[in-house]
Length: 473
Image 1 (cartoon, one colour):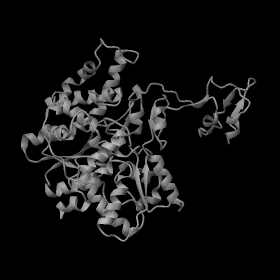
Image 2 (cartoon, rainbow, N blue to C red; image 1 turned 120 degrees about the horizontal axis):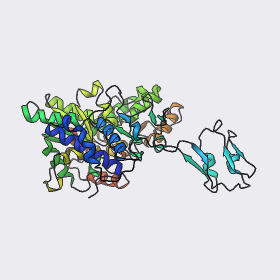
Image 3 (tube, one colour; image 1 turned 45 degrees about the vertical axis):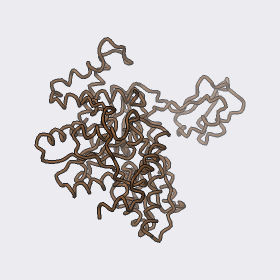
Image 4 (tube, rainbow, N blue to C red; image 1 turned 180 degrees about the vertical axis):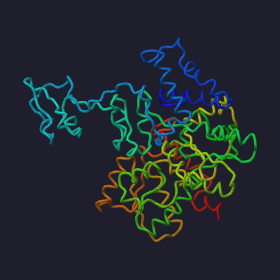
């Protein structure tokens, strides 16, 4: 029964599971030093130089599992000791260079960075090279390789560089907490802080004093996760953990779609507000467009606000695929509605820390939102929902949306808009490839997730946005 895409994810999960297991029992402080030995026994081979380094790295992973460095405001952190000397040379000529006569690499280089030795083998002058990669594209032998770290390649906003010790270093002024580097690092040397202990504490207090109820708000991308069980069983598992109710964030998406459509028709141009990494990207890289960001909250905050207004003493935990949500919920304007955020990876760890086999549970119904709210989870879904909301509200506005799949596409659209050449009046920004279904906190990633989300949307009882949000009128 495979629950994760990679072994790195599985290792991260095991740390979270063991930390959570001890926290439920109230023995975390006295057992914390035993956890590395439990995960990596001395009898098993390791990928590091020795079992002691492996356990030292696990100790750093445990620190992130219990909240990480409180002095660092970024939710993404580097485990220096785990950063395992990845190639850092950038574009380099390999032994595959045949010293050909064509010299296409030289012709295409606008910086004059490529020269040849007596044997006509190419060499790259690093003082002139700007890492454009054109030489690698035209080489007929594929003899020029890009020896960049996987994390650097994954970070499209260039927030990752090398420290003096050659470990990865994150520029917090650029980082948007999308988590792309987390998923792509082959050694798991980059990870996000976990708030799993906060959730356990809230559940335990709720059980003890009965003063408040726990509400779980689940992202619509949950429909493509936990593939070994039914969605109804996942909902049952969440309630078994101690949650009073499970509500779809997609219902918040319905709320946002209705309001955002009206706002767009009044202002004439907007960028979406549902992806916190995209919103942060605008603030940091395109500040002139901050006033174009929809003034509506994200679906997470929108539905949490409704819950808190109905039950002011409640505690709301968002469960989804997004590491950037961990930064979003800490903002004062959001934290008054959302108490905590965990990922699907952390939810799996919670299930197993309590030995909850969700496949043995009965199916609970999760049916709050419309088809359009549910497809917010994938690229293009927000634009479809806005179009539907315009239609349902009879707004006199012609939508011309540009769905941006990944931060590169977001950059292109924003650059065009800044130059006045974008043929669109609505930018749907999704920082992760594929949308939320590509989030770093997902258990699984892939094209199949899109079809699962669409299927989930088609199963919605409420067929229109208006029907879904009528419960709030």
